[in-house]
Image 1 (spheres, rainbow, N blue to C red):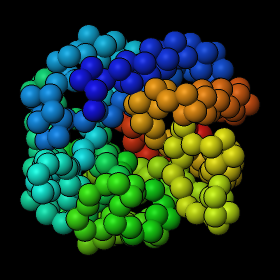
Image 2: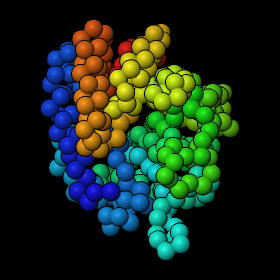
Image 3: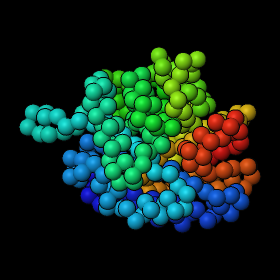
Image 4: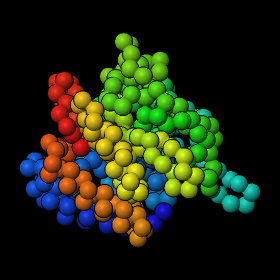
Length: 296
């Protein structure tokens, strides 16, 4: 983890320069969602959980002036000792630890901005009923941790040290919903107030095995994956595209080429369709008013 977050700065410069082109393509204001980590791993590595808010405060103010949304992204990484080295464990079992990570991030945001954050996502698509309950109690308006069709797995990367299992999201709807208090993967009559806005997802072909796998819409993935997922999701009656990306996506030559292609492809789509690039809060306004036009 680089001390200066050069990937974040590189991505910010790129997306800020791209904004006028996207606005020209759609004829509308373009808003981004910036999901920042303020969790214990950041606290230990940088000395304080709100490091990015202090270090890049002027840039974040620029985002807000442009109408963007600052969101909270939380990983339940915890420090552990393995033999003679200190490393990190993604803990999907200890709910108290996960709650601590969320509260730390929430409180760091409140201290800096003087208000509560509206949007949250959990790293690696992690979620539980207990965590969803806390998110709702803290007043978050939207969670975007999940993607439909994800099968339960122990880890997303072979090299990661984990405990527990990531959730079974095979029953998660491919639309926004209010999660049931007894099952966060489904809507229910007895539900939380927070909106779950799942990432867009679809079936794609694995480049090595050739098998079909489920994937979220990750900008920086292979172009045919992105095209397939977008095409599938655009066929819905009230389509929206909800994509994710790593802030260091442009720091690797191959990823940068694929990401830049993806943004060019999305720009082309914006010229053909009634796209609106909006914040999570703006999309929730549409949901609350039952007015979900095509959104990106």
